[in-house]
Image (cartoon, rainbow, N blue to C red; front, side):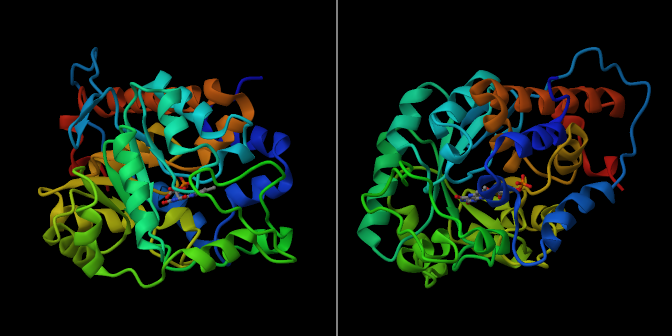
Length: 353
Ligand SMILES: Cc1cc2nc3c(=O)[nH]c(=O)nc-3n(C[C@H](O)[C@H](O)[C@H](O)COP(=O)(O)O)c2cc1C
């Protein structure tokens, strides 16, 4: 039976994924309170729909940092897609391209950034950057992304150190044989116990990144730069003052600081502070077209999904990825019709309470 919605993809994925991989994808930090809170933030808000509007045609198209898109649904950067499918991120890229979704590739992908670009050469793509203690390596990553046609750099700033993900500790999470982080030369160590990801992050990622480093990161390529992992207006303002082109409101899907504010709750203050000056993306718990509508109404320009793309990839490869984006897009179109919004321009804050 074909999954009818994003939650059903999760249920099927749980059956087909190895438990260690499912736990890695589904899990969050500590008590996973923020994972739950991200969803609840959508449920708490209700739609004040308009009536007697001609909605016989709906226009979902939008424009983000120089890219024309048929809809505002984005694939958030998620690590290690070969845990879900042997072709990994190349397969995801084919699915994203088929559905017209902007793909954000993680630094810690299991297919190299060049091979992902080659899998869907004409499709829009951004590159997510983790900053490493070895500055020259960080510079090389950005240079490679630029040369491979990635159209923006998304700097993730909510991982100075890795959150404590107890499912991974319990499972002694390690990369299965034959799988590697393809943008790196060095292999990920196999831990005796604990999570391989904790050891890897501690060994090479820098916890010392600060506002002073943003200028350096921006100088690495002539591309727009976004900052991912912001949940406060003052941080957003500071980023924009530093010349950042986009704020990605996110708490990393509840995988970092447990107890963090749900990203949807953080969105309005950030939109009020910098919404006119830069692009705003939000992610965390988006599972329905009505969730996308609520996020857009609160001022997001683009809305991203993390876990659902991996569940879909595990269930049906590129077709699955295409299908989850199309489901979400069609749900958004339906919600716009029912809410009296023929285009995204009518999706304004007074739609939500
Ligand atoms: C399995 C997994 C891996 C992730 N890897 C990354 C990553 O490499 N870089 C990053 O910036 N965010 C990463 N994230 C966070 C996502 O980009 C996104 O913020 C989050 O998944 C959104 O929440 P959702 O899963 O509820 O949609 C990851 C999330 C998951 C679930």
